[in-house]
Amino acid sequence: MSMNQIAFGTGITGVRVSMAKPWAVRAELPKTPDLCADGSFLRSGSSFSRRRNLVFVVNPSGANGRTGKEWKKLLPYLRSRLGADCNICESLTSGPSHAIDITREAIREGADAVIVVGGDGTLHEVVNGFFWAGKPVTNHDREVTHSTALGLIPLGTGSDFARTFGWKNDPHEAIDRIAKGQRSRMDVGVISGEDGEPHYFVNVADIHLSAKAGYYASRYKRFGNLCYVIGALKAFVGHRNQDLKIKVNEGEWELYSQVTALCIGNAKFFGGGMKITPNADPHSGNFEVVILQDFKWYDFILKLHKLYNGTHLTVKNVSSRSVHSIEVEDVSGSGSIYVQSDGEHLGFLPRKFCILPSAVEMIC
Image (cartoon, rainbow, N blue to C red; front, side, top):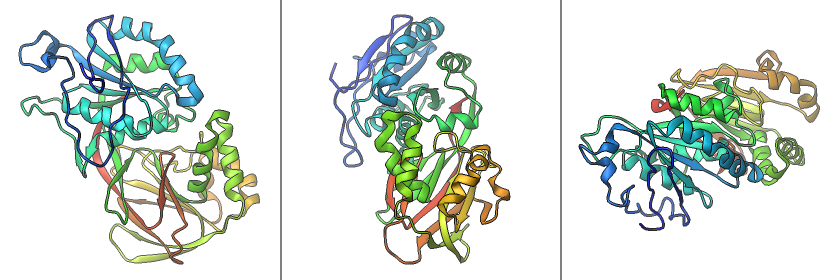
């Protein structure tokens, strides 16, 4: 078995597989080896075909190493809870973008589900692994009727996406959800920019101050949720509100003056529990777009509690609208307005954001 090969475990014992060497991402489509040494579990009539094949994508360094430690403690319960009905594969990521490749390979080889073990960053990569060159990744075997579902065991720093569903950072509860296997289709956001390469997100994409704060926060994750406070403080230094123009649902361009932050929510929370797009619903077929204008540093201090409990839509200079697509450009053309999605820095404006309704099945 090659170093980059995934293998499914059988029954309670399982097989631990560390994906030790990441492939090049977004360059050349890698040739996919079989998930089992002889590919037998996908063959028609195989005894494995009656079992659910689950790939657990684990970022062992997530949450400052806490994810890896918690995962090791969780394995005995996972095997006892799922081992009788499922083939279990543990795939450890070894660096940035590795989870994307693991996911694409698992889908092509017919996994029933790819389960994220970690936070929003790992979830973001796995979601991007469901797509390739602007299209959904599909199973090699066209006769197979099931699709690969997305699952989540929240063990990250923020775990903001899980909050929308009311899920706690309780891995045992998450495993019980996976055991039940109930699915629902979920919307996915897609972002396109000047390079034409699409990027996908399931939680919140944001622009300007909040995106810049997220960029800095990512450097301080060793401090846990305090990283968001540090990121916000650093982002405020030298911050200036900017005029932006937006185009909603392929309509006419509109000018929004002195924008502090613009948030595009497929789900509700970001920044470690801030309910920034409180009306967003990943099953609705639309984004909620929230725009903060002409905010000063003291506005955030005075209104922070409203941002966290989701009551800020009644505040002056805050507007909200439901859209299925939005384009955003910097009026000045400076090329310095930050963009991020699901906490990942994506560069700078201009960008276009579109909803892909019911694009992925989620274990819920």
